[in-house]
Length: 144
Image (cartoon, rainbow, N blue to C red; front, side, top):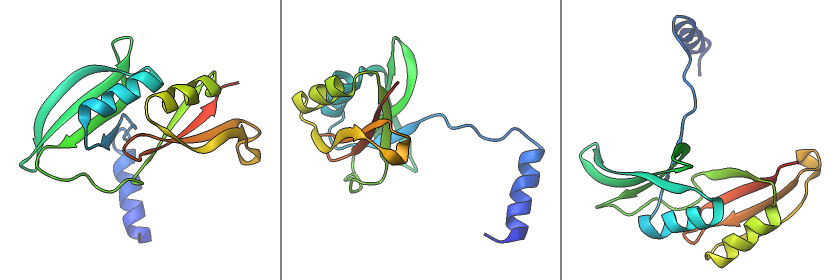
């Protein structure tokens, strides 16, 4: 990005509120199966189902949350298109009991990609990686 373009972006942000991160839309093949997985493993429940279009392409999505409140993860299914390959995003979760979470993930069809272990790079926090049944990767960090 050019210095001029960077300056333009900075000035436009100075004239208004900067954007805030709000959610991630994970594109999935099987909306209902993946909703069950994220509910069983992470305790996220469906809040609302949306049927809409993006650039004239029909979509169906489920907004997930906890205790009736929005949780930041939305599962999206392209009705007439194949989803992109996995690896497009790594979801991040925290848990007070990473071992129990990994057990729930395996019982729900997930795969352990990296066994939870203390990570020097993460300041000694216990970190592990899971793959959901469609191949999407999640990094899980145990809360202290």
